[in-house]
Amino acid sequence: MGMKVEQVLHMVGGAGETSYATNSRVQEKAIFEAKPIVEEALREVYKTALPESMVVADLGCSSGPNTFHVVFEAIDIVDDQSRQLGRPPPEILFFLNDLPGNDFNSIFQSLEGYEVKLKEEKQERIPPFYVVGVPGSFYGRLFPSRSVHFFHSSYCLMWLSQGILQKKKVDAFNLPFYTPSMEEVRAVIQSVEFFDLDRVEIFKSNWDPFDDSSDDRIYDNVISGENVAKSIRALIEPMIARSFGEQILDDLFSRYAKNVARHLLEEKTKLPVFVIALKTKV
Image (tube, rainbow, N blue to C red; front, side):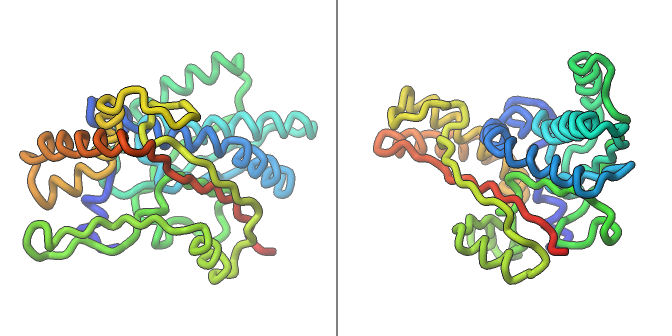
């Protein structure tokens, strides 16, 4: 991935109305659905390795409340598992990785508040843990060899290194986004030969991230269109602004919201979400 793409390919920072932190409900729902698989994998890793210091890496952590879901889930699971085995809980080191343009400041400014909340819930009984930011592309090497016990990555593997071409306006714009089929995902994993496919699940999420219903009814297509537009804007605004200028953003996503609203009158669109657990081959 070229340096120019790495600089512009990031979510909208801060905590404002158009920020990723405010508009990451789709990603939150995916993390919730994947939670049982993540918990099982964490238990298995801990029981197998029994490390005195456990290292967990989140690839594509972004910023906002979702960033800490996996952090505190890992703390809870590892602490519980160590007590069941009659062992002292290990120290846990978390590497939070994303591209250099990610709003890491927001992550670390909010960390203290999450830590206080966790201590209250656990009545101060939490293992020592440390959180480190790792800026850089996970398409290259980020960590020393065999230094991480557990990798987590959610809603980031569709960002591919295709780049943005230097031509004029629309003809020059290339969004590095690809949604593979499960067959393609399996083929890539098998071709690498470093991992065994431990578990695969697929679930569907409503296009409107705030629509938690399981039926095919659209309750308010206009509101749903606006919700979809906000979630997409939080993902791709920096890339649009870089190529076309910030002055088009409000009008562009207003038009997009209306287009989505019209589409939802014809079909309640659902998005497939893949949850995949891999094990390194011995």
